[in-house]
Image (cartoon, rainbow, N blue to C red; front, top):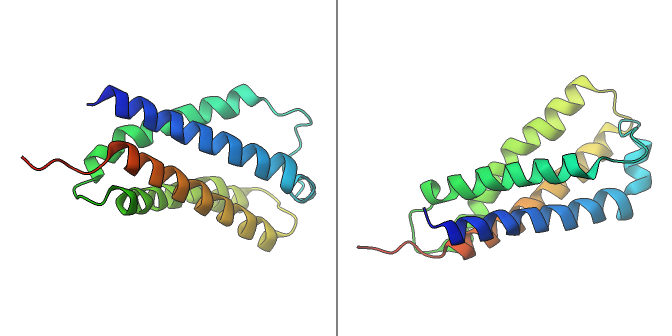
Length: 137
């Protein structure tokens, strides 16, 4: 394992996820998310959110080298990101909506899906770029 690429990949994922998540949920769409009636913690516990992002980044940075087999790192990274994003979406959006009363389910699905697509396209592209093309030996 290349520790330098691994570390940069984790950091890239955390930075992208934190900046996008904070901006998306607490600035741009704060009122809409509050209106869903499911986010009831007045003061979010940022340490839990950052801890979650670090764990996700560790997992993605670990898995990517097993996935990447070609010489096109950015498209491969985007595909990997979307695949992992679909998994995360199934847990954080679909399963969440299945067990929680969400006001305006269509808006919740739309915003949450768009958020995950943006997050995982950017993060996946960065992880692919950081790992670079596979060296043929």
